[in-house]
Amino acid sequence: MQQSGSISDPLEILKGITSIGIDGCFGLSLISNFIVIWDNIDPKILEEYIKLLKKEWLQETRKILDFVLEITGKKNIYIQDFIGLMKLIKKDYKKFIFDLDHTLLIPDWAREDDYLREKVDLKEQKEFFKVKQHILNEYEWTFPKCEYKTLSDRFKEYGFHLNEDMLAEWMKYNWETIEDKIVDGAVDILKYLKWRGKKIVILTNWFAATQKPRLERSGLISYIDKIVAGDDAMKPNLQSFNLAIWDVDRNDCIMVGDKFETDGLGAKNADIDYFILGKFSIKDLFHIMVEKDKLDIWE
Image (cartoon, rainbow, N blue to C red; front, top):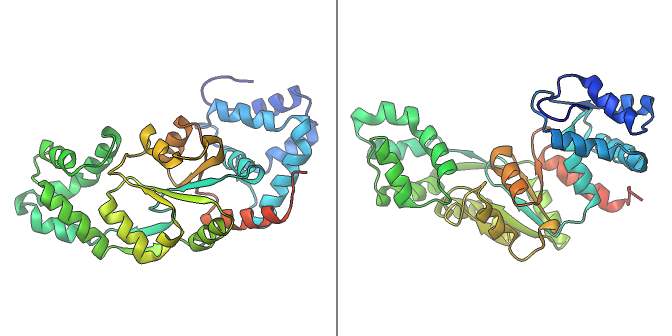
């Protein structure tokens, strides 16, 4: 089996399966249930997948796969998703760490530019709005946490003058004007986890001055035990995950988010499990957790 680089030939997977004694027909049948991103798959993920297909896992794997497909109505599953779901179903996590934007809340940030148009010089606005998101993305990856001073300095490096007071006003304007839509299934999953006695943490990369009021206005705050915002530390920085994990063994924690670059990579570096939404939604995870708690399907 190919050990490094991208996997370009699906037959390599089948060779790997048959070489460890898996029934060829079953291996082919199981592979047909997956969509594999051959150019991007991490060899380590592939190795873990192959381990899951060993004979002692065969019955369990087939049962869980059928269970997931039946509950969600999906026809196929990414390998990465399947591994995450296997862990989610098999393990009884004590703490769930959720990203906020596009995981639990879908924000409409359109009106924030109204505030910025009042603060940025008219002559600079065309260039400012062209590079604004790039500056913010770069800031998120460069600095360990959000601070008005460092963000103001970063804008200055690009020739834009937004002082600390302006940025603080911007955060206030944001939470007052953002129109959030609660993700379908978000209330259900948080309510269910709280009922099950699980700890729930929000791990978000933006300022608490914006994020906490949004959680309060949406009503989600009533289910949350702790908020780790960008002011504390930003993902994928290890400190942000350590603050979220805090008083629970990291083996008992799972991160749920929508971006591998921040949520998945950060969780991986923190040595905790993670699940990245995409093929499966929050609503899917809710139904899977409810149904798996009704059945000991791995026994």
